[in-house]
Length: 100
Length: 158
Image 1 (cartoon, each protein chain N blue to C red):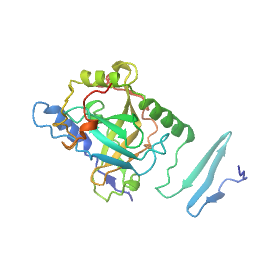
Image 2 (cartoon, rainbow over the protein chains, first blue to last red; image 1 turned 90 degrees about the vertical axis):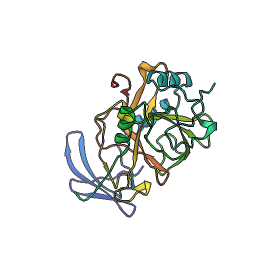
Image 3 (cartoon, chains in turn red, purple; image 1 turned 45 degrees about the vertical axis):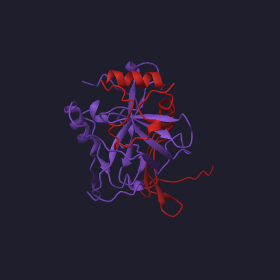
């Protein structure tokens, strides 16, 4: 890991178009300004990690629980999938019929 | 300001479907396949998904990996559960989708339901944004960090 010392008002350039600037240091908190192209996603690491965890949990949703949820919503299973709202051309192999 | 906003049409579409359940389901229209323009956090190798409706009202959908059998996200149109949830998207936030100024994008929230329906939650902090016309998608981390990552789904309903 590269470690640099910077003072308030000084910057670090990453690549050609990312600039990190130290704005304020107060106690153990540092305010950092980030200039980057909007296509570069900038996130607090702990939030990114939380989203990773949340996504990993989401894919473990069980078929039984999903079916129960559909039932609770009053949206009964449409076995044919023909009146599905998603364009009406739902892939029959992946349609609304519960699996397993 | 210098950035324009992208209209989020799914909210209105879902509301119409909800208020007219007996009638014609004129609800969300999603493409059959989507390609994630930027990786989903934690699923960097999964870009291609098929989209299928889980109900006839445009509320629940399954995003299934085209690559990994059994890998599925359940997503929901948020309007049914979170009527006040209408984050403003900046056009440049979703520039990876290739949308043009004024294009409509669809917003869906990832649902987690593992044990029972009472513990079902939705991720309001990082919704899935889909450019339906282009078949592109991304999971967007909203700047408003106060939004919950696990909002109870059914407490909010009705």
